[in-house]
Amino acid sequence: AYLGGTGSANYLDDYEEGTFTPTYLGSSSNPTVTYNSQTAGSYVKIGRQVIAKIVLRTDSVSGGSGNLYIGGLPFAASASSGTRAGTLNIGFSSSFFTKSPQSGCINDNDTVLILTTNLSTDAISDLSTTIQVSHMQTGTNDNFIMATLIYET
Image (tube, rainbow, N blue to C red; front, side, top):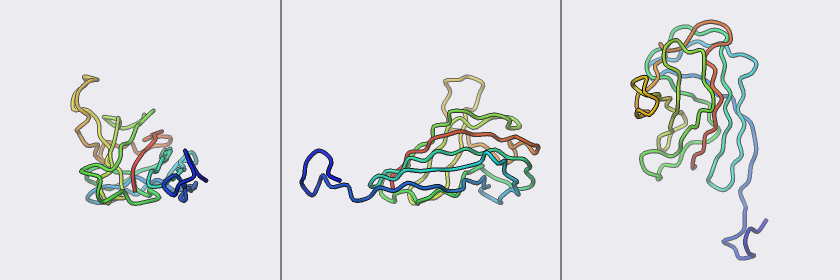
């Protein structure tokens, strides 16, 4: 398909839709997780841009340590976009032990999302504090995130 003209620069030759399985990971060791049936991931890739929808919900969690990540992304992020290749917009998060994730980012050349929150209860504080695996609840219907990720491959 040609967009905005018929020249070679206007030719869209890379479009893809698909699904993936998002997972919770730990930076030091991965938790053992049983996922709720609502867990799902889908994406649209147009050229080098990826738009991914993520729904994660757990039914049990044990073990693991370090920063809490989301893995299973369909493509690795670009290695040449600066310090961050994409951002995560969390529309809803609930049922975490202490702080819920409020945002996240993906580093260059990486396939995992780093989950972040603010340091205080002040809603306008920087989203610079990483969520830890220890912030996850261990019961049914916990650790619920609905989010959209936009990044460059």
